[in-house]
Image (tube, rainbow, N blue to C red; front, side, top):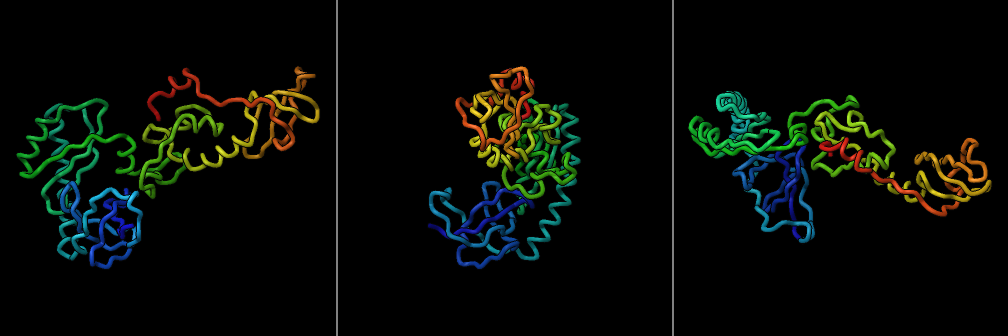
Length: 287
């Protein structure tokens, strides 16, 4: 076991573990730490607690100290510099005729490095751009290509539900989502209806997936052969939330299916939920 504190570097970002050392830290305290990017200022997002060694990636770095007024002044100054660097970088991108979109710029606290985040449909040869930017800013330059989900998280916005993006308002990490989840939840596989503003599958598909997986285990699927008090039949429709089924009886296949609760049937052969190749091809690129 090891005692660690959690530090976050963005308002809604991943929490990284650090050794607290001899210092005393509370939630929302600003602290100075050394990361792979350089010296940075973060915020305490998790007070000291014990974590098992299996959950840690060692060696852990120690928190250097609490941020002082000088550090906070540097942060404010860096924000202004980032706005200028963004404008200059856009001009350089246009000059070099690069097919890329600049998303964000970040200075490390000590100004030893500037990070430029961008999106692009393909690989971009930005070597000349880096040389040009290094000549302007006289410091280390790093360009990072990010995905559209990361772009949405950085920029923020409103989703189709009318609320701020989950990724930019409270989600620390992205959760894996898949077409299979949408299928299992009975949603229309229309890309417009199941993809977010970023163009990828909505993160909220993950929220209720555990409940749907449980309901799918206890509910016969479409195509299942079941026994009912009125005879054997095939499930033609299900409502996972209410547990109601529509069953077409073998003894009278041309009649309207009967409605019956899942508790009142016995499954002889269950059906399957699968995403066929045609559906996958139609939704290619939004996972």
